[in-house]
Every structure is written in C-alpha cells, then in structure tokens.
Image (cartoon, rainbow over all chains, first blue to last red; front, side, top):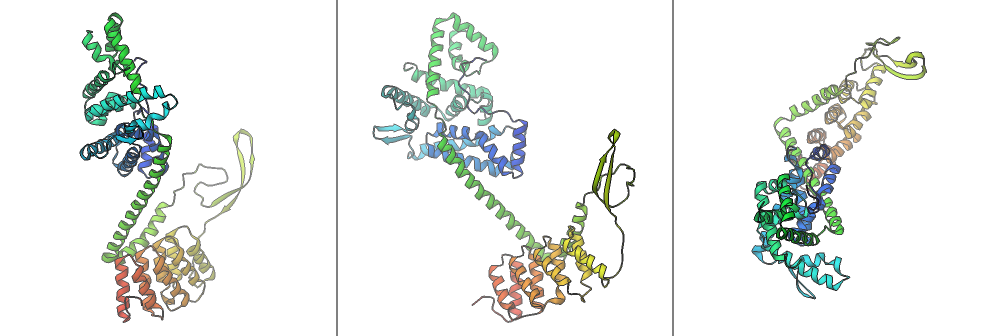
Length: 205
Length: 305
C-alpha cells in the first residue's frame, strides 16, 4: 500500500471484542457503556455532518438525532455486522434528508451574507486558520470556494463517497456497505468525484 | 498500463484503493511516462488542497453536542422508564380486575417459592478432620495455626441447627416467630411467621411487627399477609393511620385495594375524607373504582369540597 493516501481520520475499525462487549452492555441499559460508544464515534459523526452540511448548527442537530436513533434502536442491532457501518448509514441518511430539504426549500442556502459580501457558510467556518496572512487567506478562500462549488455539483452518491473516503478515511468496501451499494460502484463514484475536482482545481494548485 | 488507465487510477492510487498488481503497474507506468508523471503530481496537489479544505469538528461544538445529547438521553430514559411503569400499571390493573384473589395468592406464592429457589445451594464440601461434610451448622474462624505441609489448624465457633416444636402460646416459640417475621431475609419465612402468629392475639408484640411490615416490607406478598393479620385490629387508630399511609403511598394496587377493604370494614370519621383524597390521586382505575363504590356505600360524595 502506498504511503501517500489521504489521511485516515476516525477510521472505523471492524467490530472487535471490546466494542462487542460495550455494545452488549449498552443494549442491557448500561449508561456508561453507551456513553463510551458515543465518544468512540462522535467526532467522526460531527465531522461527516459538518463536511456535508457546512453548518455547525445542522451538524449539531444531526449528531443529536443520529445518537438518539442509535439509543432507541440499539436493541435491534446484531453483532454480526459493523456498528460503524450502521451508525454512518444513519448519519448519511439524515444528512441526505436535510440536504434534499434544503434543495427543495431553497431557504437554507450554504451562502451566507458577511461584511465581505455573500460567502459560503463553510468558508466562514474554516477561515480562522489563515486570518494572520491576507494573501494566503485570499487564495484559501478562492480555493475553498471552488472546492465547495464542485462539492455542490456532485451527485448525492458521489458526494457521500468522496466525503467518507477523503475526510473519514473509510475504505470503499465499508462505504459501499454504508450506502447500500457495491464496492465497485463506490469506486466509480470516487473516481468521478475526483475527476471533477481535478478539472476544477487542476490549474489552481 | 496505458495512459488512459493511469490517469483513471491516479486518485485511486493515492487513496490506496488499487490492488497490489494495479499499484505496481501504475508505478511502473508513471516512471516511464513523463506526461502521466506530471498528471500524478497535479493529482497529489489537488488532494493536498482538498485536505486543507477539511472542516475539523470544533471541540466546543463537540462539547456542546455531547452535553445536549446527555440531557436528551436522560429524558429518553425517563420516558422509557415511565412507559415501563405504565405497562406495569396496565398489567396490575388487568390482574386486579380479572383475578385479584388469584393475583394476591400468586404474589404470596412467589414470595415463598422465589425466596426458597433463590437460596444458594452449598457446594459439596471435602472431608475435613473434625468436621463431617454433611454436618449442618454455621462456622466462624476464631483462631488459626499454620502447620507443616500446608496443613492448618482452625478453632471455630459452630452454630448447630436443631428442631424445636410448640405452639405460639409458648414464649420461646413466639419470640422466635416474631424475630423471623421481623428480621428473616426469606420473604416466605416472614409471611409464614405472620400467618402463624396471627392466631395468637394475647400478646401486644405482634401488632408493631405487622404494622412495620405493612409499611416497609419490600415484598408485596408479605405486606398482604401483614394486612390480613391486622384485620382484627381494624378499629385501632395506629392501624387505620397505617392503612391510610398504605393507600396513599404503596406502589402495589393489590395492597392498596386490600387496604380499602379493611378501612371501610370498620368505618371511622376520617374514612370518607381519605377515600375522597385517594379518588383524586389514584392512577389505577380498579383501585379508584373500589374507592368510589366504598364512598357510594357510605353515601358520601366522590369529590372533595
């Protein structure tokens, strides 16, 4: 395996004995076990929601709803499947629902008004890192703007596969399971998404 | 590998999503093809730019989300517990309406047999010098003296079991039964002791034991037995006060229903007022109905004024 792959963040691991014990305890009503389960995955959940929805408030809502659904349905979870796959399926479905609602309503635009004019919501979130260098800040802002435009133009599946592979470091096989599709189909989505990024950013980087 | 496939595989190579053979073929190709090598460098820069666009989960947002989830989970657990209580009440109601006597009997039987079944069986003991394995008794080590070859000498206190018999009129029997009714960890034994003791109405020691059991025993079967044993004392003020307390606080509808029966059997000046209060507070419809009927029998109003 090459060493230049994108950084794996919160990479979901296959279910192991410790996690299985934790899930069993949580299924029996052990509050602490459930909390440990939440803490094992909640950064990843928040990050997926942030990247997909570009709004801290929406990400916060998705976090709440996802873990409440896990709490309500944990007794139905069978230990022969992956907990992270189940959890991320819940999260991505919730995010997709919200993204579709936004598209329908057109009122939750990712563009927000700022002192500098209309800006992408995500730009305002991620900007803090470049505040000290105006030139770098400008380039970063333009770059982000392009990236976010491409992200908006991706199909739902391309977007999800790209987010889960690039920012969550999930393997394509796990992504396929999460999204209810094949590994090969997930690979095609990733390929198309990266091609679109390449076209949009190739002359900029 | 040709140039078209190399371009297609560049991103997948960086994601580590190619097979070992595909990776090898890709690397071999870009080492010999300058165009594809440049394309690959561009692909790496695109990925680096994408990495910079990542939005990390803000620790403050994470902390806020965890805090709120904690509260929501607490609410969900309380709702779940409330639903459980509601289902138990529904179950109690069904039992009370359809088979109250059978339910009361079942509770007592559960106390008897459950407690007995739950009594742990002793593991078979090895033969030890000075102690027959089948010999019953409670041992407590007083002294010990380690000896050679891992042997040890113990000096023990031994409580031996023996059988005594008599009637409740016998002072010793009565005291032992009172102690069992008050202190035994076996709910069945507590209830049986009360049952035997209720035959003896001469001594005043029983009533406080029954009153305590009625108000504090954790086993509803024992509380029902105490209620039954208290019937002869239904006119006594301390008993009526305890019955009122049970009516308002006992969590078992069977016990509350029996308390109503005993309370109205010997009507006192405060009975109607107590029942009116229960009608307002009672969440079990059978018990509420019992109260209403008792009030009607007393020609008293169901409501309070």
